[in-house]
Length: 200
Image (cartoon, rainbow, N blue to C red; front, side):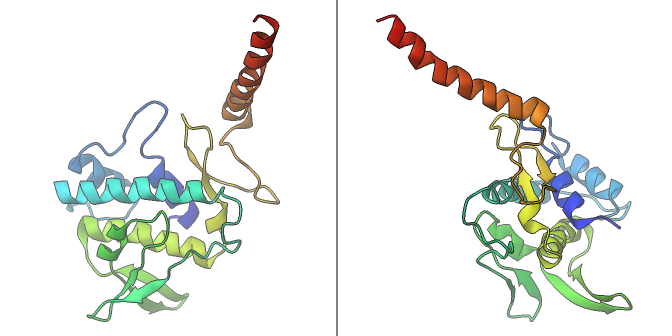
């Protein structure tokens, strides 16, 4: 079973902003990525539309995690939206700031199990695998971890991570690397005007 927070971060990090490396550059790579995480079956294949939906979902989730740094974001992580129903009666995920409209194309249904109610994809195959990621996002809202899901504020990085700090104040994926990089750049920017004032 995939941990919801880890799955969301893992999916966002399938594209490395700093290196430009993409773990899902093709439909076949998308199917392989989902398959390795048990989100689809071994015979399931992906198409171009599936890849486009996955990339939109991934990058919009990155934007949503970036929003979790913003002052005044909902402290309980409850965005301005909630699961809603379609005419057919299946619950879907309503878009909220930073989360794509493609969520509406990933319908989920609630299934009662011995462990309690769980959200399951309506569709099978790759759309169902992507819907499992949407369900993981809802799970992080339900267990209270959504506000702790962030991306590194270093613009060249944007690596997704879970902020485990007591007051949710962590900004970088790594203080030693990205934190120092950001602080060094800010220091140099402050020093530049000072140097200019000494040499008119």
